[in-house]
Length: 328
Image: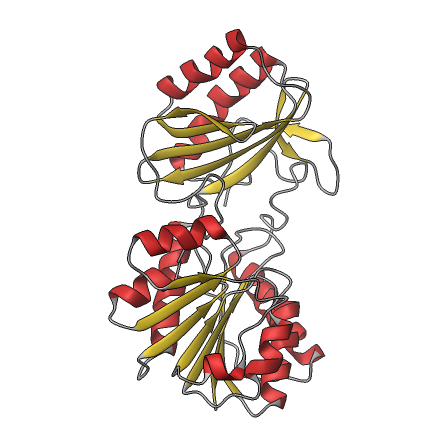
């Protein structure tokens, strides 16, 4: 494979120089070692590999008109002109962004998300608020580059389409990755009817579960995401599951639970789930270490972790997504 010209400087990709087989073995071993550290030796599948050119969201850095990604373990910006992992639409946006950042001599960061309606942009300027005349340059940029929505300093300055989620919302890194995870979650819930989706976010699993005929309720601390789910007539409740996890009484009427916590994991909730007797539990995690910690709590409570599937959501990085199937 041809290496990115910025590999070794840009901090985004660390393993482009490995062969495909060595790369996937390395990522699988990250999961195996995290589980082994917690005394767990379940079957771990080979990594489900995802293609380059599919990452649909990214955060660019900018300082004094320089635009790019941060260098490895540094805040020094590496100017880039291309990126192998981004979707074609986001890669095409790099040059126009470079030009407008340089023209405005801007500093801060720019979060971009490739959506079916166009590109969603959230621009955070760390130095100052732009005068009206310079804001007009951003509007022109939007009109020329298929921008669906543009927020500057948390304020909307351009909107071509009404997007069904808040700005800079958490989405799975790629559409194909999201579809892969949904298929795995549905597989892990076979034979179930009533499902709780904990840390549901904007409904990555809640919506397809609802569409598949499950009686599902989502819980998350992000109010905008919960409101968006309710507008789709999906049962959802705002709740901080770190400080206020569901109780055994709230869980016991369900057949199964889906857990998709942030990197910190779901320790408090898993301590309660360890006591429960449900048909199935599916845990999705972007952090093998906290996945292993929480899995050990469940296993010590009588759950069996019978299959672990790594998914390479974060191509060429040190991160790996993990899906675990638990039965009791």
